[in-house]
Length: 160
Image (tube, rainbow, N blue to C red; front, side, top):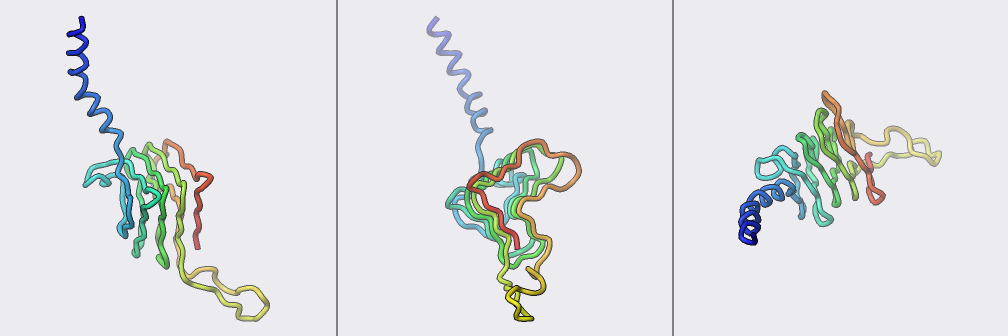
């Protein structure tokens, strides 16, 4: 009887390894300037994306910093930021997918522009920002997104 249990356990081990491997995620643990997408996050293969507390994504060109474009999840515990970049999105979610998005840290889509007080009345005049088309978290495209989109208590989203 003990031998049958041992054989069954040994035979199941490779299957368990495959099952646990399916729950892996690609972590951004350092500073990077290139965007990442769930469809190609794991060296060209689809995967969950996690930005750790030490990780950041700070591109200098337009587009999404993280794109959820497959049935995966995105977790931000680090810094997603652009400065002076129009047409930029912190986390872009494409409709028709299943997954989750959780922001537990910082998404800042900002610029260095400072409006002026042209008539000296104590408040700034004119535009608040010079850029346009900036989003913290954006859901777009055909089809519904199935899953949660959560800005955690520690999460902050700032757009200028």
